Image (tube, rainbow, N blue to C red; front, side):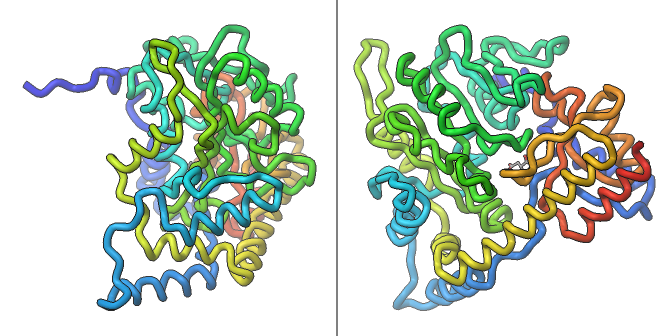
Amino acid sequence: MAHINENYLKLPGSYLFSEIARRVNEFKSQSPDADIIRLGIGDVTKPLAPAVVEAMKKAVDEMGNAGTFRGYGPEQGYDFLIEKIISNDYAPRGIELGMDEVFVSDGAKSDTANFQEIFGMDNIMAVTDPVYPVYVDSNVMAGRTGMYDTEKGQYGKIVYLPCIEEKDMKPALPTTHVDMIYLCFPNNPTGMTLTKEELKVWVDYARENKAIILFDSAYEAFIREEDVPRSIYEVEGARQVAVEFRSFSKTAGFTGTRCAYTVVPKDILVYDSQGQGHSLNKLWLRRQTTKFNGVSYPVQAAAAAVYSEEGKKQIRATIDYYMENARIIREGLKEAGFKVFGGVNAPYIWMKTPRNMGSWEFFDKLMTEAHVVGTPGAGFGANGEGYFRLTAFGTRENTEKAIERIKTRMK
Ligand code: MLT
């Protein structure tokens, strides 16, 4: 008899975004004529940049030619892409990285979910609350957490770091010892950022406690304000304690193309039960070379084109477009009397539901009365209850329409 990993039974029935899709489809089958605007999952609507498409086509042609065909590539990613990542995303900010410290992958979702495999089951993990659900669910699947407490909306053995309005949605350091800390800034779902000084507090904590920070920086390209750090490595000492996850998904419209990268500095040590330190970089390399065969050549060639002069210009224009959507949502909601967070350095706007309405209740009301789909805050954790997330990744037309409908139908 085949037995299952019973940790899977601790999980709620479906993943947040699958549950939203299910509800939308159910509503659509009842009201087939409803003109639904989707500002729920953070999926982009603008096509790939022309420079990216051109590079991908060229690479596909190379794959069809015996002279230029490529089979398995390096599991860690092609040097031509890693070199561009380092020289464009890090070197200009004074961050030095070795070629073997960058691991190209198919997504920050899979990397943030997989990375916990390296750590022992007795590690205590901390997450912000609200949080991108992948960090929690992947640790539940692995068996690092306790059971789900439906009353609290939280798992046992996880240290939750509340991000609440009174604290400007910023987490405070844990009051008990933790070993693994997931941070995401610019934040999904609140859209808020930390200053360099605030980030330093976490780096210092990690250094003092021999903890590791798993820093999800998937929304870095949306930072507008000069004083917001672009990378955790801008903070002194972060190289010893922080892994950084980046993605081309939101930066360059790769949600359907799949390419990302993870930085694992060689300075980071993790310890065995005898207290002996081991290189986290080597362990991740071992994991990746065993379980992953790399991202396809045409996709990596396409990602490299993101850094060409043309590519940079085109991508910047798309990000500007989304950030104008963010401004429209943010200002529109404010005008309508809603309390809002984020949307300044991130493509997410985190709004307070009216009259303390439950976030799933607001989701249903917004969908059925305004035909606008967002993401209920409760889906991101107990402290997300009473909040709601909208994304700036829609088209301009739909974004404007959605705000107009919220203003007129959701008072
Ligand atoms: C989100 O909506 O939070 C994101 O699309 C999720 C993701 O990137 O996987």
